[in-house]
Image (cartoon, rainbow, N blue to C red; front, side):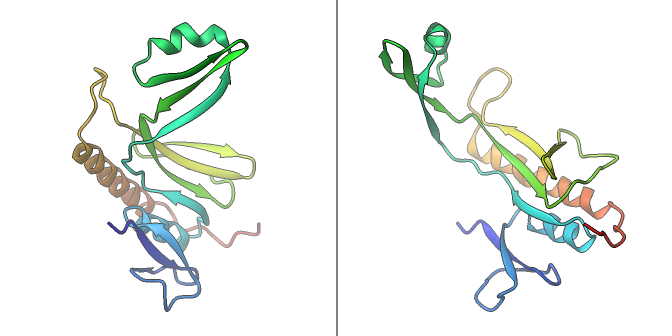
Length: 171
């Protein structure tokens, strides 16, 4: 399935194909309308993600042995190798994130429910975590996670639609 849309860098219109648009950038389809609105209103974006349901595992090396007992009890962690000075393990990724990284610092009076905004160096990031597990630690169905991602991207688009247009910025 194709997950990307193309956004023209000049007019921020969303396109399906990039072949004829040299001033375009690629953006996840679900979040592209929001990114387009934000840029049209003067909120310059740097990167974004609509969240993706995918089964992934991260591998970690040389973890302190004091965590071995705790990590051994976590059903999402596989202890790979125990050594004299530490241990290596593999951990299941249990969530995804919807985010927009801005090309500058922005202050928003209000954000959609479950979204937060944090500043990193010289950029703001609006972010929302979406869990693969429910509050009872049961794995959620892929279709339910994907529906939540769609709904939250729509909420984010509506939020962007209600933001004021920025005056010319002198960054």
